[in-house]
Image 1 (cartoon, rainbow, N blue to C red):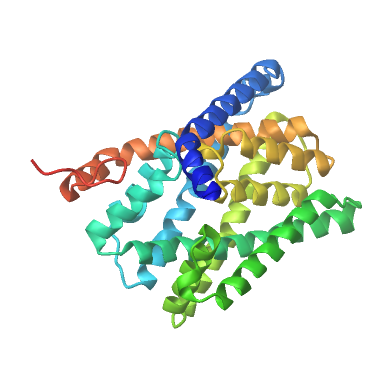
Image 2: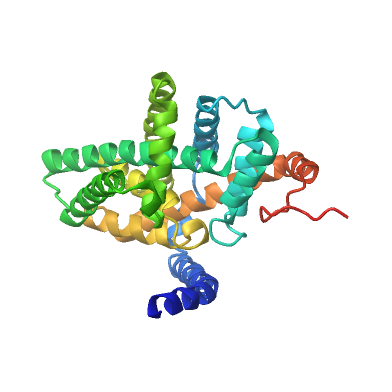
Length: 331
């Protein structure tokens, strides 16, 4: 009974707690930017071509998850139109900052179900496979960066090593435990996620070429994100080793999967700043580079999302879906 009461209490308090935390994070970021305004003054004297390069790389990295979604859906025999694999994810990425936590995924699931006939279970397996594959590739890249930093420069940040090793162990343990559980007992969120991923991999087992393409896209995403970080550091006038930037990039991308507050505003910046401190590259420099990437990312999501807003709105209206993912009542 106590567990049920606590569950009901958390259900009531969840949104206020999350949005209070979100407001505090936004305030902390705003205060930091204000106090470090002299450091950000480098942006005023930056080479316009450097800014253009940063935005161009940001444009490319913004589209990487959209291509992954297209490949994932094709593996399930679903052909997506341009508005489905570019437009809908672009609008969803923009809504991350305004809709309640993960409501953007509810909207996507409703859209693909009504338009493409993809069941919620199939969509969940697509998301799970994409995330699990990406996490596996990112972990390999992150550990490669850490190993390089240790062997080349003698930098061995044990908290990052411990965090990545623990994450590997937790994923392996979750998969093994879920496989041993009868399907009827896979009720917690982690078990459901792993079950969805297993179902997705079973469905895609005969399409190894597509699975390889997804893994390759995840790896390319890492290197594009590394280029983005490198450009951000260069604009701010900092010189950082490439192995450090690989680690920061991986942590940055993990923050897009493990959402705590809408858009993980403040969380991503704090994590990357702390990682930069542990790698010996300075907390402030890491935080500033991530904030610059955040600003360029929001700008890019805004521009791309607004370009697709009308076509997606027209599709949602045609399908009878509201912006929150619910079905509109017919008059």
